Image (cartoon, rainbow, N blue to C red; front, top):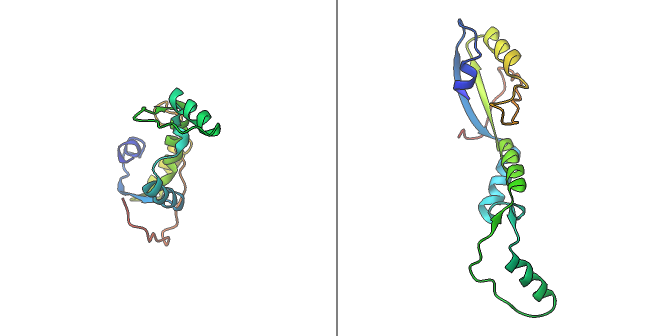
Length: 134
């Protein structure tokens, strides 16, 4: 984040610090993932699992063994985009002019043709952050 923003700051300005914090959404999801792992939707059903599911429905027991699960690229991408909401960065600038320039140049900017947009907001100086930074 620092490298990206550093390239958009005015020549006379400076970025004092960049701190990464977990969002409330991120804390909840990370806690869930710690207990349950990633969402099941990112894994495709293999042919063996589909057969096993049908046999179970018919009342016949069958063990899967070590069949490897395939990853659904569509669901994986959704999960990766969602993970971008797990954290946010707080950027401290040397002046209002530097912060205004960064905001004007970067808010809504797409990051390297990734379809990930930068969402910037001003934070009042009196705002405090209780969470442990990452």
